[in-house]
Amino acid sequence: MSKAVEKPKKVTIGSLQKQRKTGSPITVLTCYDYPTALNIEHTHSNGGADKGIDIALVGDSLAFTALGYTSTSQLTLEEMIHHCKAVTRAAHTPLVIADIPFGYVGVSDERAVDAAIRLVREGGVDGVKIEGGVKQASVIEKVVDAGVPVIAHAGLQPQRATQTSGFKVQGKTKASALSIVEDCLAVERAGAFALLLEAIPPQLGSYITHSLNTPTIGIGAGNGTDGQVLVQNDMLGAFDAFKPKFVRVFADIGSVANEGIAAYARSVRAREFPSVDESYGIDQGKWDEIVEYIERHRK
Ligand SMILES: Nc1nc(=O)c2c([nH]1)NC[C@@H]1CN(c3ccc(C(=O)N[C@@H](CCC(=O)O)C(=O)O)cc3)CN21
Ligand SMILES: CC(C)C(=O)C(=O)O
Ligand SMILES: [Mg+2]
View 1 (cartoon, protein in one colour):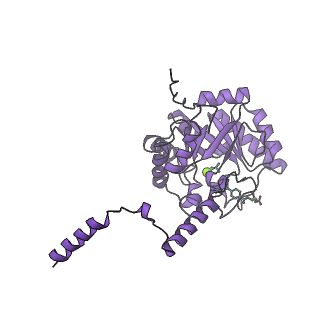
View 2 (spheres, helix red, strand yellow):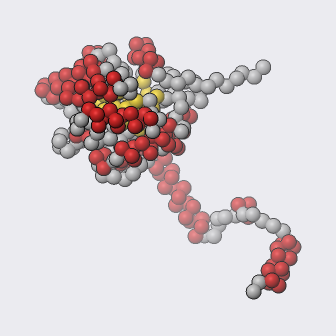
View 3 (cartoon, rainbow, N blue to C red):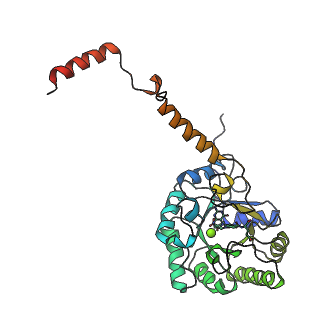
């Protein structure tokens, strides 16, 4: 008897908490559209939770990587929803989380809650990510109360890059490290189900991970967090406008794509493409009859 192909089991908040308890690292990767979501779904072809990419993050980094903006603050909620729809058509097994774009948190609780609900209802995502700490704890609580699971994002907060004078490592002084620890404790108390830590020293990443009961996911936060996240275009060599220190290129599809496109252009110019096999041929006798017919009838 042939073994039935088992549908992979959907990742859940519960399975992520179990991974933290058992020390099985949580894998997170950004994705922005249907093909990048298919890449992530494909990692589950041999299993489910705990096997492939656990969380697909529709990050507002798509402003840079998918839309060519020069800042994430240019990204609208409508654009984010459009990308979430494409992602959720392909990503069925991972938990899918969307960044709430710039301009929706810190204005009024209602504005943030409405944005979170639209991302779930229209974008089809499972939850949202909110940058912030102590000051954003109450809005995180409101979003959670509205029924939308939240990942909090502390340390370097790219939506505040202008206020922090650029994409700079955080938590290198006593005051800064303390304020990040306070942020993490506050968002955990507010009900965030996971915590993303960006661009902090590895010791601080481990310290926070030991201080919380909530799973931590690091990007440039060292090897002591419960999980890791990278931007898919960065780790596939498909984005080079800037390259943070924490990026490792695991496969260079950017150069493969460039080489392929250049080879296509060369083949067209050399009239080497298309070949006979790549054309819809008919035999010459038939064509001769067609030409004769056309010549007789054309005006
Ligand atoms: N493509 C992409 N990758 C990312 O990792 C990313 C985005 N976009 N957009 C949103 C934020 C912005 N991020 C960034 C961007 C740049 C640096 C960077 O170049 N950092 C310097 C350190 C600067 C300093 O500490 O003075 C580095 O060398 O890593 C870090 C994080 C992370 N996120
Ligand atoms: C870099 C990750 C954590 C993110 O927030 C994004 O992709 O927007
Ligand atoms: Mg982001």
